Length: 173
Image (cartoon, rainbow, N blue to C red; front, side, top):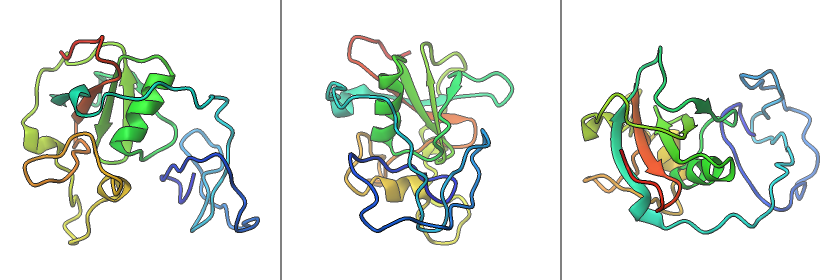
């Protein structure tokens, strides 16, 4: 974890030495890195997660509620890319992965209970209108599974999930 919200993964670490500025705290109270400093955790997972079927996993933009969540498991790792969120939920054996408001990755085994949302509700490209694309868009620099009409990756919105299945054996809601 870096800066309290960015999740990076890899098979090696420490190539730049030990950081002494991991001063951010995650929602669960654990250490969450700092400015250009990573708190490193072992996942306990092996690299044998099956490859994903890419764009065919996209289900659309679905509505959510902040009082009764459509997907019930929130990743403690903060902002993940579309690919990262799908892999995270798949590794935990969830059927669905949803990005919401660019910084949240939600997982669940049922989805769509609040119906569809307008597709533009999942376009959190510049939430604070500062002219800088938001974090999720930056994380997608290696490409994304679903791009909207403007060619930008959908990263959800306020009470709106950019929803994916984690397997083609699961039907979209």
